[in-house]
Length: 279
Image (spheres, rainbow, N blue to C red):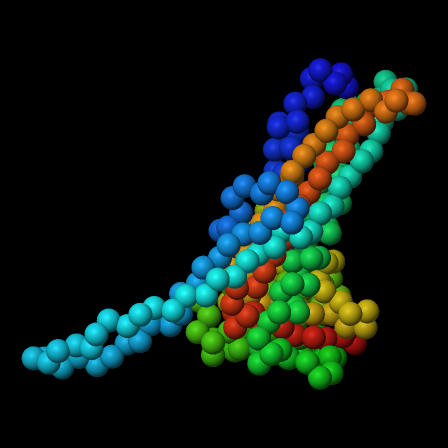
């Protein structure tokens, strides 16, 4: 690869596009505050409005004075930064079939995404409302016989919190998905025949879009399954810099890139969590 053909802006855009295609968790939260991130350590200012009172109206009577709305300010810190830095020897590039640099960039995107997805799912699992957690004291042992009923219990939690039905999703680790495949209420519902081009999407159940991910949060002994809507959590990311260079002591082309991001739960009542093990 000739360095004269390397345009950082275009390569950065290509890498970010690849990240979006392989995101699971990154596509289940909102990106409303992404904007332009200048550097790691930046923050995004989020202003929220409190509840508004609704009162009875009686014909011919004066209404109350307008209430003064309360607001609260929060900041989403862009405190995560990951980088890649690889080189391709000129001899290897000459002998390789196809564009080895392009394939390496795709692998870089996959690696960055894998870490970011785990970070988002951990943020969701650890910041849900404490009343929305099943198995908080001891993880639930899931089996093929009870996995469906616990997914329904997650739905019930969201229903009781008046969480919108639109955009509901649930993320399962492979072991739990394997249990679900043994339940005819899922396999016989026709949900598996729906559009599956979205990364990680495996069907629908109990009003949820189901996604499979190896990045579900785990404390080492149990998994955390999260059910949520996009408005529950916000995520921002940016490929801040991509640089091509020739290492001084090598006959090689090298590329390094910096990915910065952050996530914050903005409404913990819109997340339900099931802490579980698999029997």
